[in-house]
Image 1 (cartoon, rainbow, N blue to C red):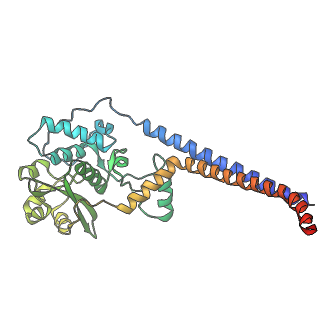
Image 2 (cartoon, rainbow, N blue to C red; image 1 turned 120 degrees about the vertical axis):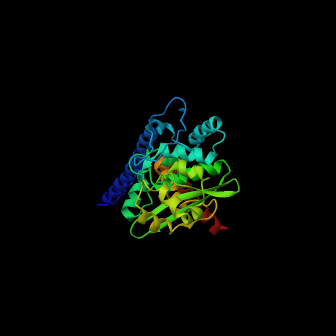
Amino acid sequence: MLLIPSLRSAYRKLFYVYAVHALFLLMLLGSIWLLNGELSITKQPSPLQVAYQPAASAVHEAYSPQLRYITSVDQLLVCADSMQRRHPAVPYPSLLSWLLRQRFYHGFSYFGDAHNRLAGLIANYLHTDWHAIVIPNDILQYPNAGCSQQSIVFMAALRQRAYRVRKVGFYEPKQGGHYALEVYYNDAWHYFDTDFEPDFLLLNQVGRPSISALVADTSLLQHAYAHRMEASRIRSLFKTYQIGEVNATPAPRAYLFQAVTKAITYSGWLVVAVAWWIYGLTRHSKKRMFTYLHRQVPVARAIRPLHKVA
């Protein structure tokens, strides 16, 4: 009967060992699978020569699948720099805006099985939208992006080129929200909206006004967005604009959440391995100490009578 508790303890320890090893193996295989997915994204061998040929706005989006090879902010800037060398008279933010119009079509991208599965699982469980991607390089892994996501990539690229930027937010109860931005250059703020894609030529011809100047000029505003929505919707949405702080980090809490969950998703196996190694060292040290103390008991018992004799 005395053997049963010891057998139970042994089986329990064996179960823990196999469970930890299985968790380690699953996380390792998951990380390898995710990394393989990252590396298998189709890329062009060299940057494409993107044609800067703005035309009259159309109902359809200016999406170009050829630009899917741009999967990082650095690659985006390389392409924009190349366009700037060929069109030095065009302001850099305008070129970058045109490039982003070609790179994305409208539609929010979310973390799921492909990149950060942990963020997707937690967000779905908590019924939040924290799996809507806010990390610029992760947004660029997808062909689609929402208004805020396109603006986040735009801001990140411009800040690397030392431009001052600030968000422009809109919210109208019946229509929902919208997200754009302003860029400071030539001693003034200039409004850009890569998602709704207002008339590119028209706004360039009038010098890319700020959002306050654009809203004040009702005729210009309606002509710029005429292909996107009717006049009544334009007036009701754009009069709600709110300007954010200069160079503020968009969605900082969501960014932190996604960065942490992504690190765990890709390197959680390493955390498990290190924790198991530390546990093994601690257990081994305790075992050695127990063995040492156990060996000292006979010595202590042998010395005790000598003290009594003395």
